[in-house]
Length: 399
Image 1 (tube, rainbow, N blue to C red):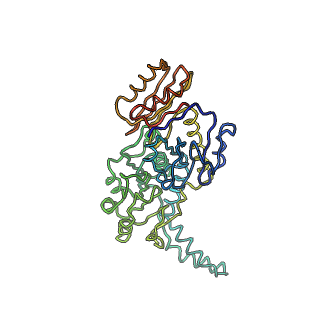
Image 2: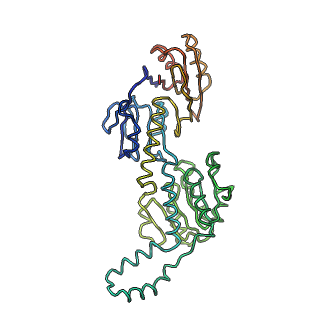
Image 3: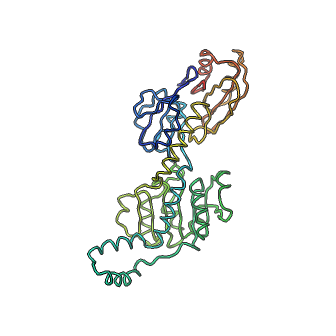
């Protein structure tokens, strides 16, 4: 069903879910934006982990911004069908995750967690000298190994993975990476000392530590499974700060029991993993820093503003990147199913109405196309309705 925004908006309503950092909310000027958690006809949503699958999306919603990288709590396909642009904030929490990966590397190699747990059981020891002597006797049980000189395999070399890989190089590790879909931008960020592997199996066979940094999509579901772990280097220590779904937990447990894996460190606890001495678990705190939450909120707000005010799209998970500088004229944007002839038909409508196009941009991504048109004459409601009536057009806006 085609949606139509009649007339250029001068103010916008933003509905928030979860606790969004104040620094991000301050990006919305109060004279143009109403921001609250209780708005019935919002132009956009800003959220973190709130699940939207069971909610009705108001017809007024034009965009949804997830203050984080994953969007598995947003019905992206349904949004695409309604012309709703879904944004995420890749890289905004990358440093927070990278630092937790560093902690995971050290915790998994040095017996720090186990040593701390042991010491906490000695609370009844009151003789300092006796305690010191006892600890000296027992410390060999927590002997670990250094990470310098070891091989770190990084699966997924996006915003976070590339930072982890570069960190490994700085720590004196041999770093190898695998990412069949690495972007040019990510490649530029990556140290030249990172070795590129052709497939996951070759990386697993060589690495002493493997850190996962891929999104939870169909192609990565149980990426680490019985078959892939079978070729892993014996004694591998696996770190998962990506998503629970990219690892087959039962396969990991079997690999731990057989000794193929020496340890598993994960930010996604499951009941089967709790209580194992060879597993270190954290309660999904990869992005839980004040700085990361602020960075994500600021990026989400800035992307929403640019879209609502200018029609530009950056970091959308369902629409193509599309940005065109505003110079003069009046801006129309429209989205459509990515089939041939739609843009030509819209341009014919403009010609029939004697509306001159000053500049234009047409981009596509999978089944969707998005267009920005700067026109000389102020578009009438009749013109916008005529564009909306074109076959395969999903939504139209006067920006």
